[in-house]
Amino acid sequence: MMRIPYAALSLTLVLAGGCATQKVAPPTASYRGESLERKSFRRVLLLPLVSDQAFPTEEQMVEEMLFEELKNVSWFEVLRSDFAPDLDTLARRAWMSGSIPAADLLSLGKRYRVDGVCIAKLSTYSPYPPQRLGIKAHLFTVETGAVAWAGDVVVDMRTDAAMTRAQEYFEATSSSDESLYGWNLIHLSPMRFSQFSCNTLLETLDPR
Image (cartoon, rainbow, N blue to C red; front, top):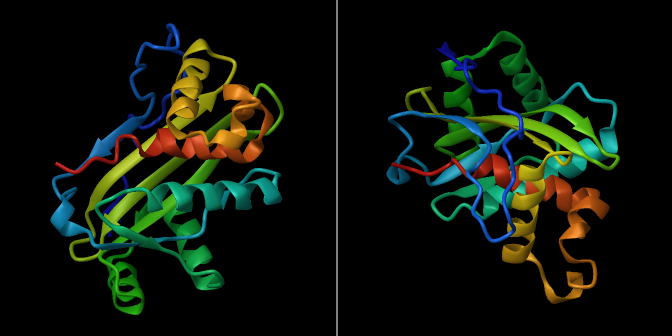
């Protein structure tokens, strides 16, 4: 079994924010393994999101936004299974035990024709302004079972840093029909806030 590196992977957005034009460093604690290379991943399977929070509808939305943000990663294709109870069980066992059997990774690789498997967990969630969302994820290579990448972030909209990054994110991704609300739409829309949080998590998913 490949142990999942949990140490030093929790970080909350508590940095002091600057002005809207100042680039704020990604507030994500992350691990990047030697196997995090473009050539190692062509297709990645996203397992069902694991959560102990009491917001099932919002949890589905967060999972959807994570999937959408993963699709924006240019160097691999991401897929998921819409209904596979065994995948949900596998994901929960992985987070509970801190390990994932290599045999399961190989089985998923053959079943879905993927060379990577991603698990994610919603660690904290407060849907009411000021919102707070914590999410962590691990990317495994099917071939070796190694952890190629792990990230952990808590996006807390009570902090100046989160608001500054939200403005930057909105300016980079907003469409014309969202201009009426400006970046405050991230405050107003749970979907946009979830998308912003997942985007923040994945900022460190850069291959060597």
